[in-house]
Image (tube, rainbow, N blue to C red; front, side):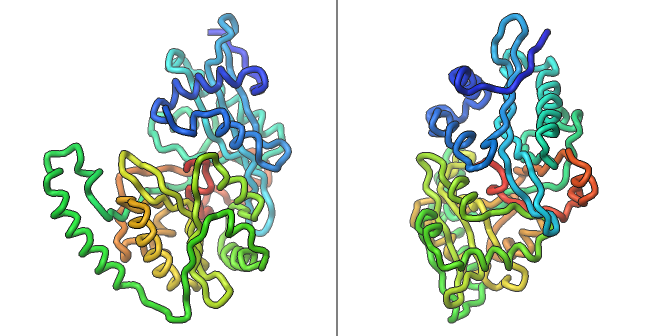
Length: 363
C-alpha cells in the first residue's frame, strides 16, 4: 500500500486523530482522555519549544489517516548533564490497516525525524507484548522490566465477577488483619510528620523545601527525569483529574514524597502512585508515607494501592514488607539512542534509570 508520511497538523486533522484514538483505544470511551481538551493539554500546553512532536501516515490514494506517532519533550539528567528525550506516546495504527507493516514504517520515520530534531534518545513504556517487535525492528532496546505492585485493601471489585464473590466480606476481614500487621512493621519516628495536600497547593509553596529535597533525591540517581515545578505543574494538570502530594517531613524539610491519584485499573478502584521519591539514607521515611497512602486510599474508597517501578526500587522502598505483591502486569522501559553522546552515556544499563508512571504519560 502506498503511504505518505508527514508531520501531523492538529489545526487541520485533529477530528481525524480523535477518531483514530477511539478506534485504537476503545477502553477510553466516555472518559476525559478521549476529549479534545485532554489532547490539547497533553500535546500543546507544555512550556517547551516545541511542546510536542507529532507525525502521521496516510494512504497515498485514500488520504485516510492510518497512523499517528507522538513524543513529548522530557529533560533528563544523565550523570549531571542534561539530555533531551522524546517520551513516545499515543502510537496508533488504524484497526483496518494492521498487519501491513505500517507501525514499523511509521516508527522508523518518526524516530528518524526526532533524531533530526536534535533529541538524544527516546523512551517508551509498553505493556502489550505484541507491540514490542515493531519497536525492536527500528532500533529500540529493552532496558528494564517495570512490574506493577499492588496492595489489596478490599476484595469486592476483584471478586465481583467470580463464584467467590459471596466470600468478599470474609476476605475483607483477612485483608484488614493483614494491613494491620504490615502497618505495624514500620518504625514510627516521633519527629516525623506527614502532610497530604492538593498538588496545586503544594506547587504554590515558595519555601524552597521541594528544591532542596529534589536535589538530595537526584544526587544518588545516575539518570533521572528533571521534575522541576514547571514540569510538575504541566504533568499533573490533566483535565478532570485530581492529584495529591503526600510528604513525610522532619521539621520543615521533606524526607520522602509521593504523588498519587485515584483511578480504575483492570476494574479495580485504585490509589495509583505516580511517583515515590525516597532518597538514599531516608529509607525509614517510606513507612510513614506508605501508611498515609493506605489511610488516603480508604478515605477515597479505593480498594487497592498500585505502583509501577523496577525491582530495585521496590526493594529500596520495602514494598513487600509493607504488604505489596508483585502482579503479572509488567511494563517495559524501552529506549532508542539517537545521539552519539547518548550512545556513550550508559543509558542501556538496567540499573541506570529510576522511573515510574510520572516518567510516562500514563495516569
